[in-house]
Length: 342
Ligand code: OGA
Ligand code: NI
Image (cartoon, rainbow, N blue to C red; front, side, top):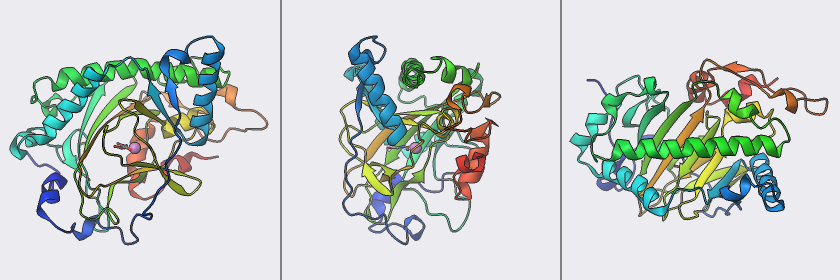
């Protein structure tokens, strides 16, 4: 089977004292110091409460999503033992011998599976990252052939994790609508009958040139919403706000949530899909798990009627299968969401 894994960054990491040219950014990554962004911690148990505390939590959420696009959810109901297991199976998978990992290798021209940056052109700068992509929902999208059988609890843990995040996503989408005083179900309805849930397991190996190499280049997520279980020890995520790169700090076992392009569209631009990137660490590896929720690719997504008025006219065209469009224009360097601006 032809696969797109050229070389695992994991193997490069131990073998070279200087990264190959293809990974080096000519102008470096900026810095060396980056300020920390005050991403608010939102307590899920307060969010749905009809109390002054609940109102305050909603207000915090609205302000955060409309200014930096990020929150961190705490008291989300997943306990430490479970989240340790999520981290554990990810680490175990990436620690397997290459031959074993290659059983999950991403076939050429597919998204699902284990691999690294797809090379589209000779001039592309590559990310210092190995990842495993797996579609989880709808059930019919699962490419079980590349789902790891090793560790043996991998599949069970992935399904449990995404089921928990599905509940969390519903609660967040409801809270977002409530905070804007529009129909609570309005964003959930736009997700359609068969929303898609895509998982991405990230390994960011140590990198000898953190000043010149990115673990993930700047991007906005094509999703409606993204949920990230960060590494509890090693920071790396940065987000752009007012032209400055800020670090997203670690809160132990919190779920980092960011708005994706499709929710920016649904909210008529009130909530912002942040441009973010991942930097490398010279000594330590970093492991994260990102889960992307996107609308049913057959449903139409557009600015909610209740958020369009004279002061805020409709900012985006409606779109079907945004993710399908997204992967094309990401490679051209354009922000795909800009193509939909009115
Ligand atoms: C992503 C992403 C951030 C991280 O997978 O889209 O932005 O810290 N990940 O791994
Ligand atoms: Ni992202």
